[in-house]
Length: 272
Ligand code: SAH
Image 1 (cartoon, rainbow, N blue to C red):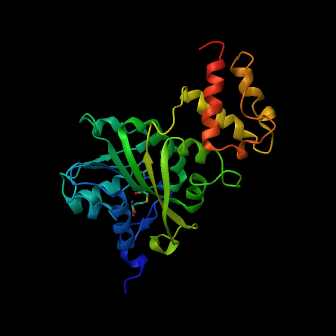
Image 2: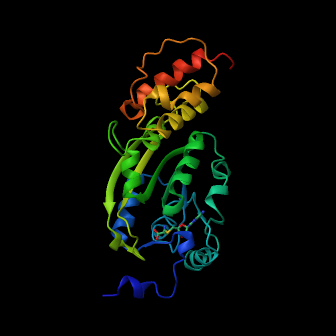
């Protein structure tokens, strides 16, 4: 049996790019299956690396594009799959998602075993592009998956659960042990699926909603009355009767309650 190390000794993974390559094809197949993509769908892979997922995608999906920051990996992939491979060498954080979704009404399906050091930046970038993204299947740290899918009144419940719960159905699909990667990460990973839905709730003022959540959870042990002092300092509102009891703490509010509270606040704003 070839050990994970021997398989990859020609290529030295780069820590600075968070490179932990998947070396278990069964897991690659399961990830792709979870995406549920049709032949003509527009696919974007973030961080293809040495091609653990790419090799199952390039011949199946003509509208596939990858974004990879590491030039060596880009070269390897072009050697493996041909110069015509649609791959952008660059930082996904600077990538313009709309550049690949030109066809009106066709939304992108994103997938990737993404670098853990920028997981939350990537998640928020996807959320910013919600209008053109259908769904995303991502390998993340188990802890991040738990925070995304957390129920209220748990330690994991916070900004991620509320921000993403308000705009997506989130499923924690399966866990992946460290042994499926080379080099082995120190953490267990999980594959999650986010099915985005801009209209899951009616949120009158999205920036206000985001700011409310950030503020509410910035001091999660405190009551809303205390944690929202700065927020109400910055947002001038008329006297308002709120349905929510402000002696509650942020972690006791469901996503829907946050949506309702933000809508109530929005309707009482003195200046809009
Ligand atoms: N998907 C591959 C590689 C996972 S490692 C596999 O499953 O084996 C994470 C990959 O993301 C690496 O290839 C790394 O070079 C790439 N990467 C890291 N930061 C990136 C960024 N900012 N933009 C695009 N790709 C990035």
